[in-house]
Image 1 (cartoon, one colour):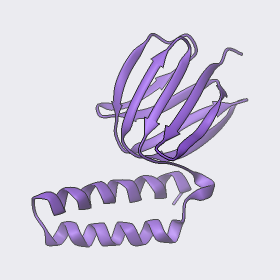
Image 2 (tube, rainbow, N blue to C red):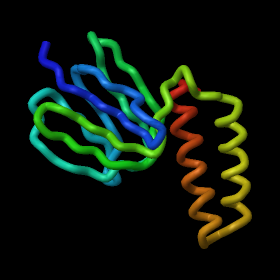
Image 3 (cartoon, helix red, strand yellow):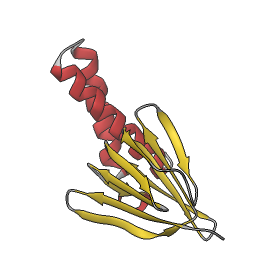
Image 4 (spheres, helix red, strand yellow):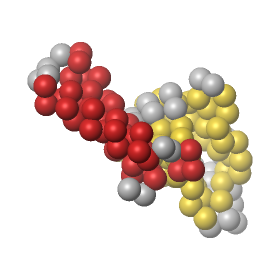
Length: 132
């Protein structure tokens, strides 16, 4: 089966560096999928899931915003954060979701509202990746 190189990097270092069969990530315009020998492109990434397949088995990560570069059969994702399912603290994500929802209901606009909305998105993605 054809493969491509996937590198997921955060400010603290490499999270994934391996050959995979496919990659799916969330751009600011929606999810996209990369298969081997994909055309080259750059994309801004939104908070969302990163999915990739190794030997037919799908793996998931909760990811922050970033940039995707696809070139020469290689996918490089530079993201603020990337958490595999096994590292997600479900109770912490639930509490974060509650706090963000409360902050959103108390502030209708401005920087506080925007930060709360981003926090809510991150919590929802963590819970989704964790299967909750």
